[in-house]
Image 1 (cartoon, rainbow, N blue to C red):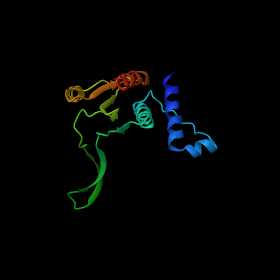
Image 2 (image 1 turned 30 degrees about the vertical axis):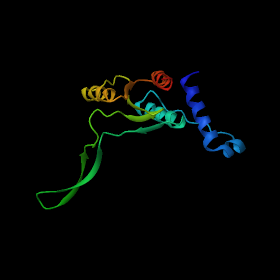
Image 3 (image 1 turned 45 degrees about the vertical axis):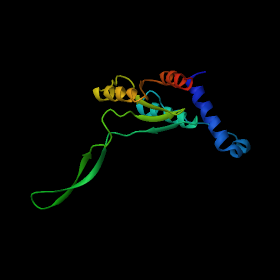
Image 4 (image 1 turned 90 degrees about the vertical axis):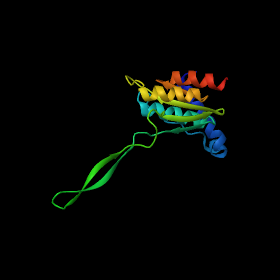
Length: 153
């Protein structure tokens, strides 16, 4: 079974369990398959699959945010400028925080030439020492290898 088949099957099962009368009367909806060649698409793919399969998965945003900030000029005029506010999460925090069969699982998405930072390596060691799982995932096949290993423990 391909990763696309597993993704679609998880969505179908989720619909049957969550909306039984709608799927019985009108049939299931087809799901849009995210572009897993991009980090955002792979993150969406993994979160959707885990949530549809009865686990917990949340996307973690650690980048901070851009806000409008008033700035007074020497002339006395106040102009609105953009200001970057750093995120409050610890450096190295994974992209996805999940719980699979009661086990803490952190997943860091690495697509293309993206490589782990020293902070991510340090956070991986910290999570593993605490008894959790922290892995770098590059594609759906690698995710399913990890997932199958965790659910069969």
